Amino acid sequence: MSLDHNKTAGSDKPSSPGPQLSRRLGILNAVSINMSNMIGIGPFITVPIIMATLGGPQGLLAWFVGAVIAIADGLVISELGAALPGSGGTYVFLRDSYNRQTWGKLMAWLFAWEFFFFGPLEIASGTIGMTEYLTYLWKPLARHPWGMKFVASSIAVIVMVSLYRKIRDVARLMLVLWITTLATTAWVIVTGLIHANFHMAFSFPPGAFHLDWAFLAGLGSGTIVVIYNYLGYYQVCYLGDEVRRPERTIPYAVIISILAVSLIDFLLSFSFVSVVPWRSMIKPGSPANLAVASVFMERIYGHWAAIALTAMILFTAFASIFALMLGYSRIPFAAARDGLFFGWFGSLHPKGEFPNRSLLLVGILAAVASQFSLADIITGLMVARILVQFVGHTIGLFVLRKNQPEVKLPFRMWLYPFPAILALVGWLYIFASPAFGPGGWKFMVYAFTTISAGIAGYFILAYRKRMWPLASRDATRV
Image (cartoon, rainbow, N blue to C red; front, side, top):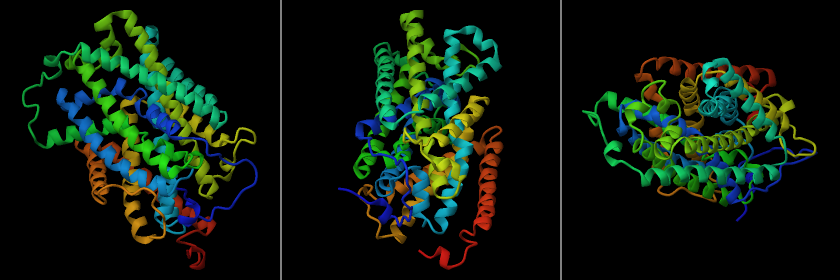
């Protein structure tokens, strides 16, 4: 079944001369891109953080809460991605579901604007995580904070250069990286299950499951970190113009990726807590806190295995950063082609047929963002995007179904509207959770300040370009 998403979504995008994006990505490519980005280095650096949010192995509950939210949101993404495939992913969903001539312009602009406050941070979380694991191989690096920041920024530049090629070549390289990712996680999971100490894994502290506001806030904070690990199940949507049969490929890729990574990440976490005492994990600055996977393997097989696993984790993290920068490089490109960003970024490489200028922008911003601390980056990138991206596209699906019944929906979520409502409640819960923790106010300020600045920026742009709502009535008529 095919779908002309430009017509069904009311698109009026003009055809442009020169190179065009080609549909070359199949289901296997799409799943490999999603999963490589989702696994990455996340579970290897965040398990101690998750344990600390509730003060014990009860923190593993956050994996289940996060999985439920991710699956519910994945059904929303699948329906939107099948109906509105295009470069930019969520940018396209927001633009077309809210009516691209009116509110869709504002929502698309806000997402493109917010992207600059979360996209580079998300990429930087991977480069910083890689650098932390590099200290296990090269211990003197840990004594030089500025040296670590330089290495993290250099990794972003290396990934950017690696992506400077045709999408067909990128897809092949992505498969190799994905296979390495699966091998790395499989080694840890199998080893952990064989040597699991169930008494250690379930050594809960007193009052571990006392249901009060502190428990709910801690669970919410842990879920934020879990969702950070799941981020990327929608990554192929950013490449919507390069996907074969998107009405089929995108839903399959999203659902398969979420289910597979949910299982993998939970088993990784359980493997760690069943071999490495959780109390040593949550102790700041301890070896288990900084490189839990390396300590895990060293306790079982010795130093040689820890070195080997560390090297594989670094390769896995590189795959994640690679997939992330690949998808995010399409967002400024899509916004530029719509006139909501500098037009210079809306061109493709004349021979490679990829958005080279947009890629350079994202790569440079990621290199700059690599100078910040990991803990603040993870929370900051989550709160900066939840309201506009996740809450925005969930509400957008309701708006699309109600206001544009002519839009074809090749994939319809099961049990509609329950998954969408569940996703909406889940996102609002984890967005509010940091506000109840120490210093959480700064993340709320960060989120609302960036949104307010984005709204102000849009009206300045609308005034200069005579766009909705400052354009004439005829200009906004669909």
